[in-house]
Length: 103
Image (cartoon, rainbow, N blue to C red; front, side, top):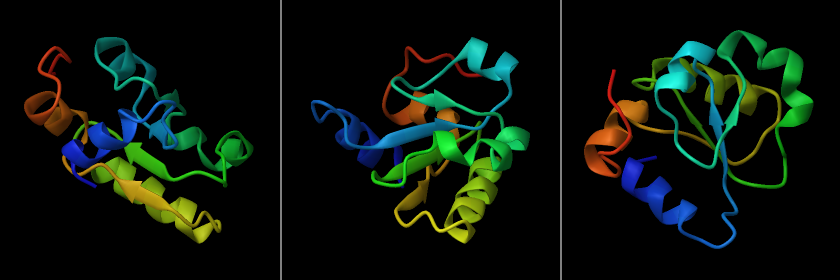
């Protein structure tokens, strides 16, 4: 999913999409897309119950590699509407919200 498409989904009031940040806590402290939930990549498998199954899910990380792996994991666990944010938060900062710091 492109950053612009996610921005459009997040503009809905209230947003129907569940945004999942799978970066490490120190990365999230620098920059985050809001609203989003935070579950570090290595913790996702043990915390699947925290991820809703009745809403579209968009997973993001720094550039998109880790989130791609987690999106695939979620699909393998039966989550039906899962997307990876292309380019991660870096692309979000470049194309949607330049106030989000790049690192």
